[in-house]
Image 1 (cartoon, one colour):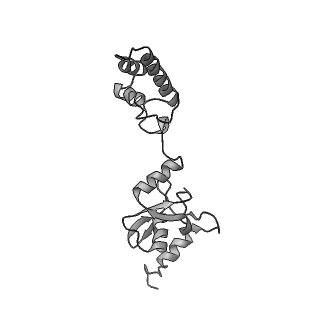
Image 2 (cartoon, helix red, strand yellow):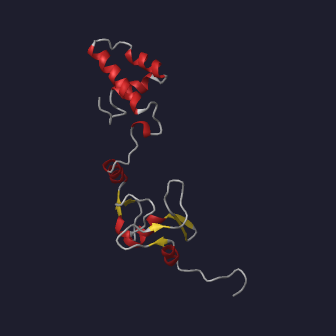
Image 3 (spheres, helix red, strand yellow):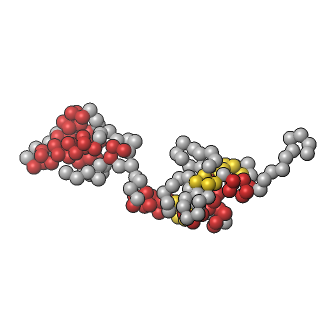
Length: 164
């Protein structure tokens, strides 16, 4: 063969060479991954998520759909573990399986879960005593956070998972 010319393997063959196939289990992607732990595969001059490529082989047409993992493993490309759905269905999966970041695990959290419990307790005490005027501002100052953050905790918009 002339210099610089080589036989290119079939796209699908190249894909499956990068997969660890274990019958009855997840098939892990062995190729490159992104910072979120999803696999990536280059084909036809484009880069596609490996689980989406696998779903394309199973379903043929996936445009406009989300590829959901029934196994919750980002590296899995087993077609039997992949189903199509909407973004809302994907969000529902995340909530049902306990993968949604809540409380202090959320990247925008101002307080720890324990601090939020203290805020709820202090607010409940002030409310029981009929002394709610200015309580949000006082608590916010005590924890060095915006008053809006305290309001969201006490109105149960955030840290909803906490029980007091």
